[in-house]
Image (cartoon, rainbow, N blue to C red; front, side, top):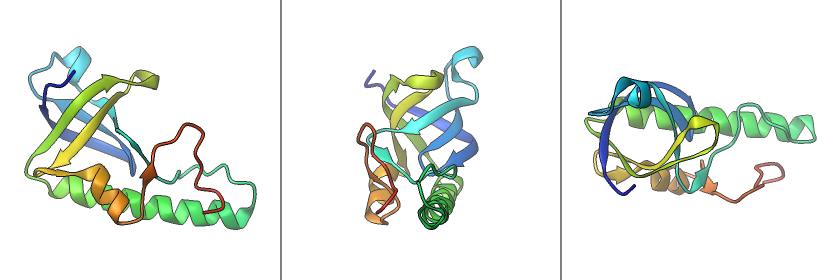
Length: 125
């Protein structure tokens, strides 16, 4: 769906996933919906890397990515969801814009995200 929707953020899970209430959607489908930022992958707080060193490195990057997302989303005057699709785990997958700028692009530029790749991993990076 290519319609742009405004949203308010309810909670933030990690750098690329948060819950939002989507304006003008019925509560059963638009209230506290999990949203994943399209086309990017941020480090995981629950790292599955093989070594303790890799796990701790990924967790530290995940905390930075989450802090970045929190600052951007909480500080935004306007949050837009664009190119909304249904993803796994009943999530919405969308391009997320904060005050007209792509949050995904900002995370990539900050080195806190990589382009999404099925089976991709932050281990060994």
